[in-house]
Image 1 (cartoon, rainbow, N blue to C red):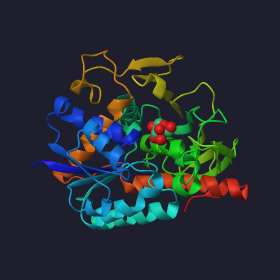
Image 2 (cartoon, rainbow, N blue to C red):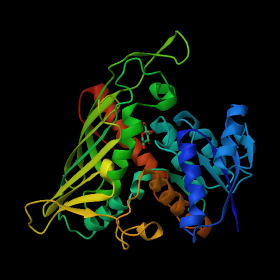
Image 3 (cartoon, protein in one colour):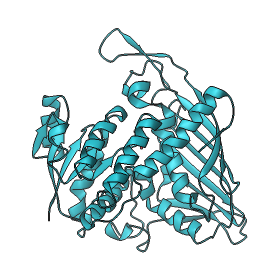
Length: 374
Ligand code: SOE
């Protein structure tokens, strides 16, 4: 059976997912057969051009006509467009893959996760936290679950970018609270929170995040609108920091920013247990630094061996993978789950769980005190 796919959104994420879909039959022959049948957007001219480039056979400017016509619906639009089409698709029994953060607000994420639960496990609702599908992260998870780091005591996650360091960098929807929800917190922090939950969130490791103390900061309050003389207000954070406490008593710290000059896409995770440590950096994503067995220094594990996760689908050992592969891996897992009627993770409940942490960080900032998660 061929899965007919409809995708809303054709810019950055549209390109990343369309590229993944095009690569699947070449490198993952056991992936379900798919057809990119419709690309959805508002601007007809840009849409037709994108459909030609990204391999879609038709276009639509009305998502309501698409969500129940396709076998799978991808929601890759800006955050404020996540809720309505995703809910409509799930209510029509169509599996949904939605970009992160799941929604601009906790209320919307809650509603989306509830609809996904009602739709049931055979209608997968995935939240596209692509960094779970970096081979080194999956390798790290195996080590942690095998107990190789002992009891988890401390975690650290930071995600640094610099595309807003210039005060003249143009305004976009990512600077608007109504459309985005939050700034660096939601856009970057959602990834970091999800990775920490994925790696140490199980009951026999650190468990869930129980309370947080957060701080958000905006450095540039107005930005120029591209192609004109106007400016628009920035209503989200440029940077956030947070402290965490996990269920097992482990402590953690988070940081995310769009104004860290010199850092383009620097996502780092560090985990310390009673018997060892590990660290990962997206800028060296084929490597995992691990310290264990009482050694005094970190060992660099090159995650490009044939028995490493997904690598057998690609090149001979040592021929490195990149950022785009994370999308190919997540599309492979998600579409296989759809075809086989299996559950998929990260799902909308994972999207909601990340949103609960982000929301608590924002409330903590407003109230000036630690906030517990319910
Ligand atoms: C922001 O610049 C961004 O594109 C995020 O939206 C993505 O989720 C992240 O993977 C890369 O940075």
